[in-house]
Length: 249
Image (tube, rainbow, N blue to C red):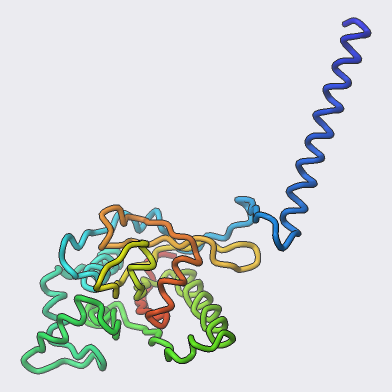
């Protein structure tokens, strides 16, 4: 190699090293800047839940308003305690949506409310019937969402609750506003989805939520930005129904 070639190679190596150092410095400054773009390395993400494994249990509700029914159907299949859709509807028809207690002779209004997700009370009404246990996080008072300080705390508490349930392998159904979740208008915006996993950043912030959404034709393991999901969950008071048995370990 000639002296000139050696000099050129040294110059190129120097420029490459300087460029690499400059890029590293830029990334560091963006991470430390309040106004800079957020950069999160893959190894800084904590995944809870099993969205890939649970994707195989996704089902469509078709053109029906049966989101609550089908969400439970999916969870119960994953729990190894399947109940067919019509039986689930009958359980809902004969169960008080506020107390969860049987209603003699049934109540079509309660059944319709379950199917539509109205009020989102006891959205996991069939879990006890199926033997997987039932745990509810009731809707928080709407007045709490009117106070910025209380609203922020409620969001943090709901996020931590969701993370804990997923870490424990529970089947989690959440009540959401479909208008916010899907970004399109729907007059019946009350909706129920099965949350199968979530990604959290190094500071504990909710980055991504994975759901099996029976109301979305492409709802198998749908991924949503964490803040979008929280915005959709909030109008329903962060209402959640969970199994007491584990769907995964």
